Amino acid sequence: MNVAERMGRLGTESAFEVLARAKALERQGREIVHLEIGEPDFDTPAHIKDAAKRALDAGATHYGPSAGLPELREAIAKHTAETRGVPVSPEQVVVTPGAKPIMFFTIMALVGRGDEVIYPNPGFPIYESVINFVGGVPVPIPLREESDFGFDLALFEQRVSSWTKLIIVKSPENPTGGVLDRGQVERIARIAADRDVPVLTDEIYRQFLYEGEFVSFYAQPGMHARSILLDGFSKSYAMTGWRLGYGVMPTDLAEHVTRLMVNSNSCTASFVQLAGVAALQGDHAPVTRMVAEFKRRRDLLVDGLNRLPGVTCKRPRGAFYVFPNITGTRRTSSEVAERLLQEAGVAVLSGTAFGAHGEGYLRISYANSEANLTKALERMRAVFEALTR
Image (cartoon, rainbow, N blue to C red; front, side, top):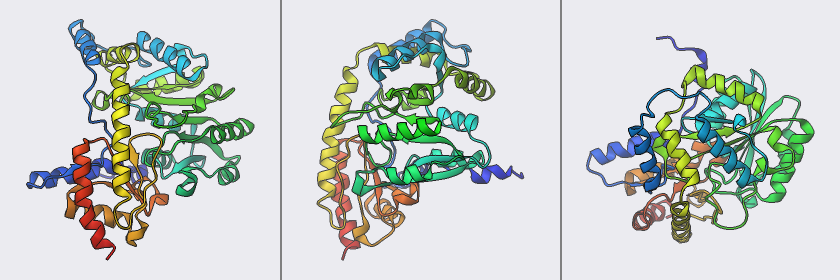
């Protein structure tokens, strides 16, 4: 078939491609340590699963409102107001099957052909993919190691123009684990307000913070009126397969995003939404335990990587990824990632899977057991020793 031209502008998410290749090697009898996929290896807490079972037994298997069930929208509005310190009404909330639709729908609703969108690079690859898909112009802001992978604010200010229709920020970051500090967030907010540019703030890793404070862009004075907050349940509650996310935005934009839901997904599964209510209102001790375990894994992995030849690795403050510098190998990121998969049986991602400014780095997820992280480090040593001879 002759597909539309725009399909050539739609990118992909390399984590799933590498996962598929790693699974193919496993079918051939290879043992692979999976450090490529950004998915908590913890089970969904029992009280959340129990809520879904009760909802199924009660018949919550039919269509619901496209913007989300009233009880979940109310719970999200209350949770957002409590965690960000700003007033939120349920009418500002749109529930979606996973958080990705909020990226897609926001960009579709706000960005036309030729409009510019500022976004972090290296960053989540779907930002750039969807900007290109709708005919927008991607304007990357490099995240550099020397500034702990924070925004290059001087360059950011230069690149905001009359053609800028959206700014995307993410903290904590994927893939770097970087966290924007208060000064950076406040300056970005001031520039956005001065230029009257809306901001999509991706805060899906908010609860994965190991040191310092989390500063929400949505909580900045006046910004909730011109911001779209993206959040969800996949990471914090180990619910990746449940597909449950949401956006909080001005009510007029929420109406447009709801129409996009009508035209695409109709609604999010009702029993899944009721599980989401239980997640927000129930026991948060499992989340606290999971984050503490991730911190231990982070430290094990960072310390181990810094003992490998040709590798240096900063200790990230958030998310559950490390972004080691492998320029000491004098090889490209994609070559190093491929050799680790084929020779060591360790699946990681090339930094360039997250944009051109990721060259010279790898993204490694520590959403795996300490035993497997230790095994991966042992296997990786031989490859890095060979690369640096």
